Image (tube, rainbow, N blue to C red):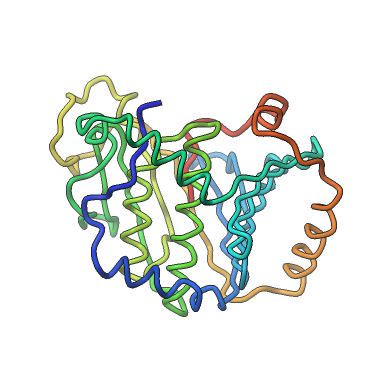
Length: 272
């Protein structure tokens, strides 16, 4: 799929400095709860709990009973399908190599339809907007209790979107990685993210110009996030339960994991 790339147009020195601070940042432990809505008038279609620990980040998809683990010690990402009792592990270096290989196959034009040439801009209603030819994010942010929490969040969101770019559901990662870079550089956490697929709006002309702030007819998928500044005893118990459960799950290949996995979330779902 011609959708991947790693060079972001407004990747600056501040972002590079932030990466150097990541080890220190991960000494802070907290939780982010996310509800995702396809229709605001109805219950969420997906709910997750993401726990940011000193050496790893674990996201529980409670709707589909799945788990994503980013381990910063052994440099790996693990997907687990709990009902199917299986897990799949991919090293960070291998993931990066796969992304680089796909990037090498892309033309500048193919990259251009999935990235924004400008940073997020402020629009009415308290939102920032970041858009490309194919999709658009509108999002609100707030400063965390400790700025390093923003770095932890952005790091995890990057690995998550990369993992789901090279594996099902094969979501284009570039625009979301730009959003993550902005959050990291600004030291902010998102409180709401709205993702609109502009390809489903047939009335919009194809253009390389920045997305207009005018409303679009496509209905966005909405993620609302609540930050818990510290972990509770119940959170610690859940982490301990996973560590016990992990040893009982069968480790399978990528092909076996995705061939036999249960039906996944709607492909329009937002990546955090």
